[in-house]
Amino acid sequence: MALTTPQQTIFDDPARFRVVAAGRRFGKTYLSMYEIARIARFPNKRIFYVAPTYRMGKQIIWEDLKQQLSDRKWVKRINESDLTITLVNNSRISVRSADNFDSMRGVSLDFIVLDECAFMDREVWTEVLRPTLSDRQGGALFITTPKGFNWVYDMWTYAKTADTWSAFQYTTIEGGNVTPEEVESARHDLDLKTFQQEYEASFENAGHIIYHSFDIEHNVKSYTDDIPKILHLGCDFNINPVSGVIGVKTRTGMHIIDEIVISDSNTDELAQEVVRRYPGYTIVAYPDPAGAQRKTSAVGRTDHSILQQYGFEIKAHRRHTAVNDRINAVNKMYCDAAGERRLFIDPRCRKTIECVTKHQYKEGTRVPDKESGYDHQNDAVGYLIDYLYPIRRPHDQTENQPTIWGVY
Image 1: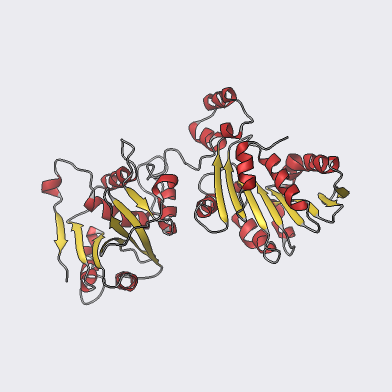
Image 2: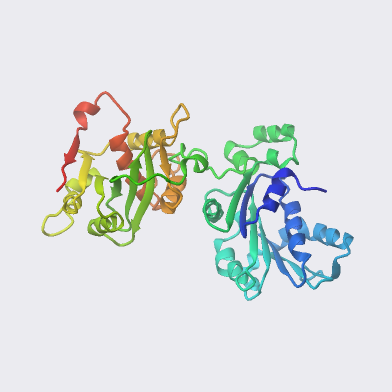
């Protein structure tokens, strides 16, 4: 049976590591068998198919894999207890489980399929399986139904921009194995979050994501123009980490071209890093308004005055804008009601992208979660956007006049 068009697209991609988010009944297992056979047709290859549990591995692929390889007269020996098939060309295919990942240490592999990897621990890949590919320069296929914003989402996001990696996302309908009528029936049987995850291969956590207008496909793009001499710095005066973003004004809005994240640091080090990266540039800073009063040393230096001492121009409101207004201003720039996007992030700003996609409200509230650590980069972006592109309200001109500090 031929591969479907989406399956063939994945199969033909030459990247060493491929991450696939796919809806239910996409045909993940069938594609996995094709991938395994492609590698195993060469002599002396070592291949693992890894499922979340032993039972899943045996139920999902073992019988079909044996049948397909036996029909082609490739099989030399089958070890039922070890779930290993040895082929006539001395290649070996083993079905393994992530719930016993220590047993996979120390082997040397040419290829791995991690099926439903969103339901495995990150360490299965990072600590055990990735090292097994090093000496043979092996590859891997990660293929799964999403499970929120866990490590597979990080991997999928990374794969979209990294060399030797690629990322795919296909719904159940696009897989071509389930009728539209059945999918529509499931839509009525399941809650929205479950349907989006299981049938639309969505990483979204409906109702809790703060920056819901952000779309990684549309808001993440490389900045390719010349860097202007005036740069815009959004910064959050946290100690661990000190956070900042560097933006440039575009014809329609703002493009974040760089990020600064320094652990166990301070405002001096943030400013020093900006000057080191961009010597000779004019820096306009949009800091946390509270930094005008907060003293950071015994001699009375404030966060704002420190930035001034490095030659930065300070632009900040006299007091904080309402948090929801600041969030709405950023969401409006990511995508407004007319579908226009005016705020973009360069793909090298990986921490900022991670924060904007993962930052959520506390359960049942509209209070941003401050415990996750995803707030700092978003606050840095927020102070910048809120000053330059605020949500306009009638009282803005009288109650929240900005403070503008000239170049020191």
